[in-house]
Figure 1 (cartoon, rainbow, N blue to C red):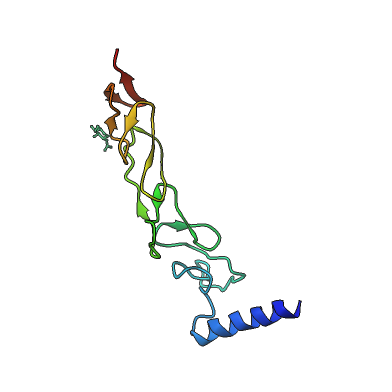
Figure 2 (spheres, rainbow, N blue to C red):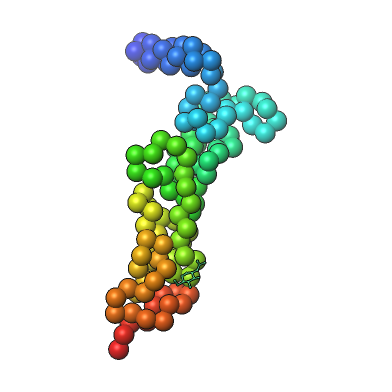
Length: 125
Ligand SMILES: *[C@@H]1O[C@H](CO)[C@@H](O)[C@H](O)[C@H]1NC(C)=O
């Protein structure tokens, strides 16, 4: 229990020392202030920016991904709306393709398939 307080005190001191009592937990992408400028704190970030999401802006919003190794914001997936199952992609920007569709953005037919359209490509006969 004492250790907990020591760590907590250390973190608070560190935040104050850095001149950033708020926003400390938000990965630099939000503020611990709500839209009225009131301090809400509690480690919950309000209004994540740079397309981030999550309680502490630690994840990406739908349709965005964080490039591997990047400590910055999230970038758009650019998934092809016809060839993808969702707007979401993984860390390597790979979208989730419809059946018979391939490519990072799911914008072309996989080998052995043709007729790119909403919902996927048709398998060759
Ligand atoms: C999706 O991919 C198809 C086939 O490459 C292309 O014709 C279409 O314009 C793309 N749609 C969007 C929204 O980019």
